[in-house]
Length: 437
Image (cartoon, rainbow, N blue to C red; front, side, top):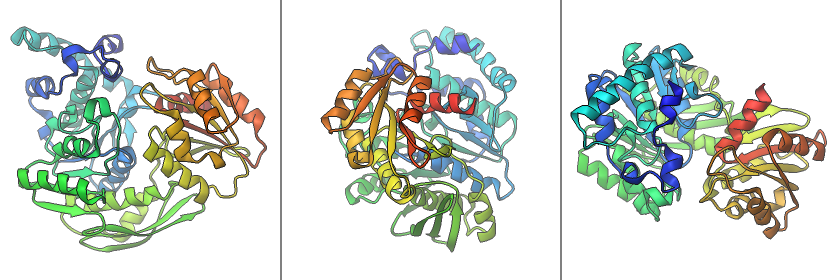
């Protein structure tokens, strides 16, 4: 069944220019799939989350907050780091392999039926099939709510066949420009497509020009409310603590003071503010502060400033674009200030500028770069990554595999140093799989 799934067009084929008409933006295929299944995505209310950075963290934070109110929650995220079933979770637990096969298997016959009925329609993509499987599973287990992360963009993303009761835009930066557009305004238009009639829009972006694009969409679809960070809600306190951050949040309904969140990086304070506002918008009232504190204290986000080793410290972070890398650089200064030296295991995908990412992290914080290609057909050659490091005056070396890179990194550090695996999430996922084994 997984071999059948992998025969379908995926993002790698689209970004490599090998998807043909399947790369053209449309909801036609996913709508046909879900309609044939009885529109399972309409059997539960949805918090729909898009943005350039922070989507997965915000999705996990929202899930914890909604579940803490006693609701059964289905969560859909992407990409996965190690195992495919990470993408679909029920009450925080990934779907079992048996259940995953159980929702994927009928889709093969359904695909044949739809294509027989509509011979002009192209086969669904890999992500469209996974999205349909997620919505089917959530309907089958009768979740009370779905917290759904957009895969790419928003307006034409397969997840957008659902209508979010709450629509979240965490932020807008330049990313996937070949697909979404070459300016932040163009990308904002794509992401604002998750706003639907009657929704509450929760916007973490602060740039006036970008917010105006999203607000125009909210007016066009007759959204019920528009909540903007810095106005209707905000992160009003945010400082490093042992094992994470302590965050205070102001929302339309309440002030939530000194909430401990076991996540590193000041940017997580912004994600917490967005998530608490989204949960409050979903329930239509303020939340119990003790319940919020307990929920946030349980959140884990694999591959996002995740500590997987100590003495030496080993940290994984999927900072794959300059904005994410800048947030990582700030975290190195504030959250890991006692670290003496940082050795990077670093790799990018084609289309990324390794020099831009490394510069955003901060070359003065990096003692050595070990270039390692992500396990992906789109992986940038290690020679290009090493050359980018050299252009910034950084010492570098290359490794042929993730295990080799990690062994080399550990050989270069003392117990007070930091091994940081970053860049592509494919690289981070491979490192996480190796380290957790």
